[in-house]
Length: 466
Image 1 (tube, helix red, strand yellow):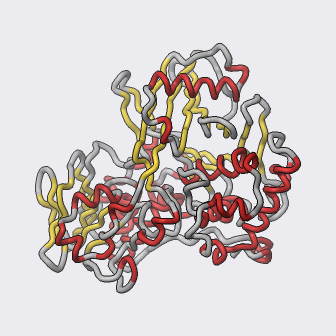
Image 2 (cartoon, rainbow, N blue to C red):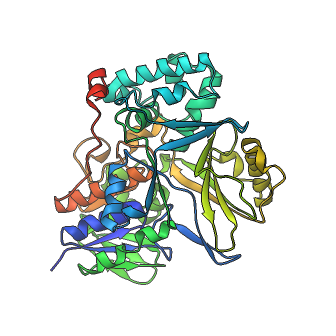
Image 3 (tube, rainbow, N blue to C red):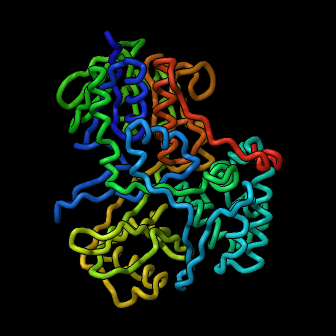
């Protein structure tokens, strides 16, 4: 008999865990409250027109080794389009391009950044000095900044407010879903070390060319092949506990008996699934109420004529941080997707107010669009999109399995945790979610595990980036 493992949550963490369990000949049983997989990285059907749209534009980078591995397992890696050229503007219509040259990392992007017109000579010099310090820190030096915010690091590096606003904050808010004043310095430094400096490939941006939900179309077949199941539209009500081990999951329709349980849900959801008895028996569950969240806003816009001919655009001085060109539909309408990370100030706005503000940003960034308005718009608020990777929370992020010391010291041996909020070594990203799922499955099966990072180039290692 194959061991049955109940997985609460069909997001990326749950999917990653399920596939590794299936590879090890276990029976994964995914319990998902929605009608489709993907969690916060999926698609929704717009009830106004029955059109399938992504809840938000999700991006992967070349440094996301585990997410790339997951897409490869799913057989959908060919649906990811890679962009080696990144486009920036400062709301004046002038486009700057960032692209690697032939120099080895970490020098491969230096020429592009020094030619950025929206940065003046003083700002470019400041960025160069701070980047050099980030390289020299290495991973050990980065760890020493885990208890401080990135703004503290930037001030330590003598970065002016204009440099922080136009460059550092734009990158970090998009990558970590927190601005530089709140995010842990260690994670912000990690974004630059692993995403832009370690090697020539890592900065490359990957975008799905299909609706996100289609990326998970092969999951059910892989799970059913080993006798597993996916329970869609099924809410988990409680994790069952006999005083020493968890025995399964009580759902809205039945009881899923299992030899182990992986809770692949956010901390606030997990807190509702565990009893006081379970919490008292597992130290990893003591700090669930300490986790805060940060919202993301995605705005879909359709136009009767072409508004943007670039595949994407970073806007360095507006509420909208990214614009993505989703192409034209069967009615020849151009579809743009605007993304606002750390969107706290937008959450109380109506859809009409949101579209008005977004279009003002688009008109400033793309002067040729002035006078053109969308004929259709849809805003999607993810109020609890990610956990907030602040310095205060780092010591409370739990391990996949119960351990002997620290946050994981003492616990229920067959209860496993997954999700980007767990102790993955990454901020709130899809990569972190997949890593957590792989880590949880490894603790159960003893097989597989987290895929190694892309190694730094020889020059990067020589300079201290290791």
